[in-house]
Image (cartoon, rainbow, N blue to C red; front, side):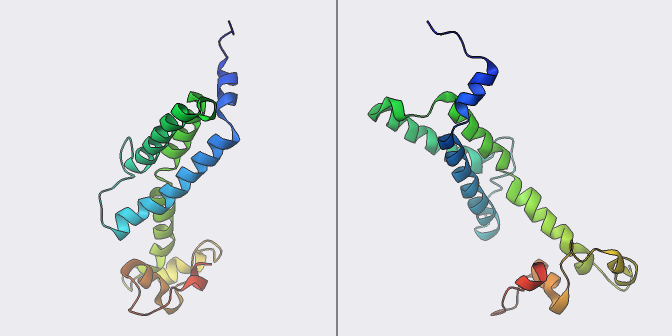
Length: 161
């Protein structure tokens, strides 16, 4: 009988190329579907819970496919340690598109959008903002970011780059 693997050995058994590839695929699906569902389709907040739907549902699909694969060809099925790696990647990345990227972009545009004659940010704050860290407000790019582009207008990518 084979001895029980150590924690290090178990982790190494789960960290395979296929577990990383499937985990990365789930991360890409989450990054595309999470913000689109919330902002594009006005659905519920599928990334904001202790067990986010945007991570659990695709992982459930992986489990179902793994059960089917196990029934057809047992040696091709994912091992439990690989499933742990896949779920770990999915759950950690669930909030990234909204919390990290969405709020970061809003924070970068806020000094220009919220500037007013009363708070004098244009005089007191804007000269000290590093140009490499904040997009410029040329042609009202920050207003368009927060309020939407006028009909038929192109996205001002150059201001963000």
